[in-house]
Length: 173
Image (cartoon, rainbow, N blue to C red; front, side, top):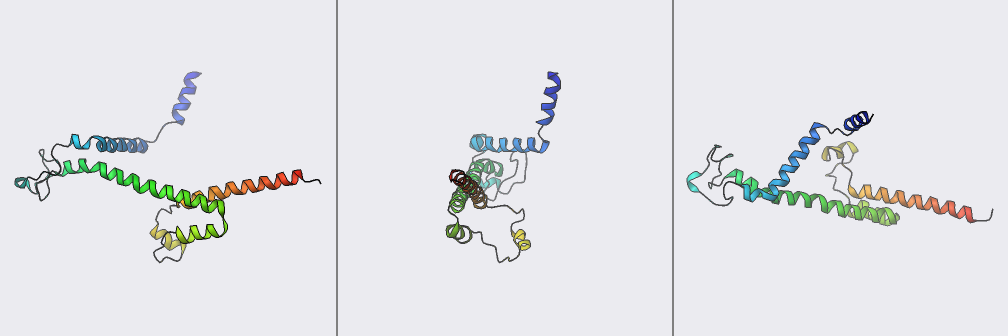
């Protein structure tokens, strides 16, 4: 019986192959971000004018640029900066959007209108219809402020309904 349960759990928690590939790529990227400068075969900024514009070979895996710098070494060295920029580009808008959305959802009214439509709205690039907006936002991503506002407003509504029920329960009939 335990073997059947273990098999059911293994089938239920089996991850798709694409997820395994994605986890492997992120792991490789994080490894290169941590150790890219030490793994690089050449110095990323040292110029060698005798090896300018070399094609890919066993000596230079991705070739060299017009200053003779190894392109593979430059990529390995630049991974750390690229990863930091990507994390910053995701974290800062997420935090700002969550805070502004929570404030707008909790206060409501004029603060909601000003924050969500005035201060924190995305430029629509001149698009006037929803179909045109998806052309500039192809996946239809929702802003973090909208999601945070909806969650906070829903929580406020639940509190309001709870207060109304409590008020009716206390009032003498």
